Amino acid sequence: MGRFDACLVDAYNTIVYTNYAPYRDELPALAGLPADVLYGEFRRLGPAVNTGRITLAEAFTRILRAGGAEPRPALVRALTARTRELLLATARLYDDALPFLRELRSRGVKVAIVSNCDENTRSLLAASGVAALADTLILSCEVGAEKPQAAIYQRALDSLGVPAGAALFVDDNAAFCAAAEELGISALRIVRADADGHRPGPGVVTSLAEVGAMFSAGRPVTDEVSD
Image 1 (cartoon, rainbow, N blue to C red):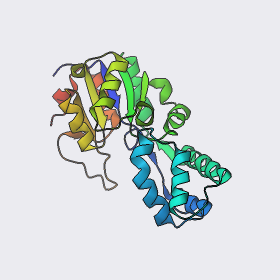
Image 2 (spheres, rainbow, N blue to C red):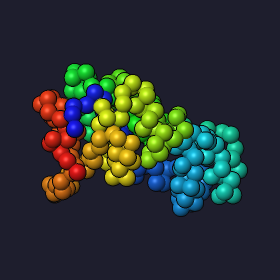
Image 3 (cartoon, rainbow, N blue to C red):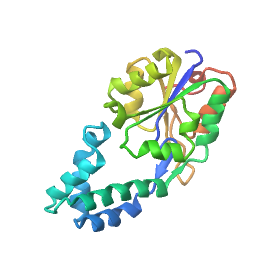
Image 4 (cartoon, one colour):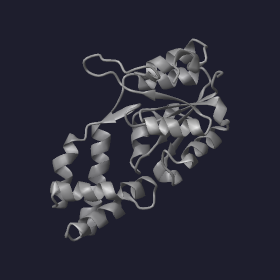
């Protein structure tokens, strides 16, 4: 395979990670619901939220009703606002994220951030500086499709104006990488190194710095890392 004109990059667990510990007690306490009820309903409604079929406010309204609580507008607003605040307060970029994006920009490589996410992710990517270094943000909640659906990958390619064969996809999820490859997009899976330094097997990278180095070396990425 040849060199790439574009890179489609996942967001969560690829360029940014989130500490969900503060969510565990705070949101159930605010809602007045047991944690298992709130998060059980949240998981059930997740696909609808992530594809923009319902907003977070609508999700919280349904969650409160399912738990036998009155979905008072003020409470729904408070839950929605606190969810956004917690994301912005707890999410952190991996150290290699911004250098990687700057490297691609300096090489003239087009970048699309492709994420399965809710409506707060655009604010996070803007506040963290990621949005300014990407050509486009393809967010599932805005485009109505999520990985591994073909439509979200195609939306990214169309937005960048490149064919599938000219793009590289980087994601931590093996199934999402496989779906990209089915469309003719080359894919690399990123698996961050374990705390003990253990490296995963061949066919993956452990950092975005590794991918950036492949671009900067002027070599085809797939010459360095193959499935």
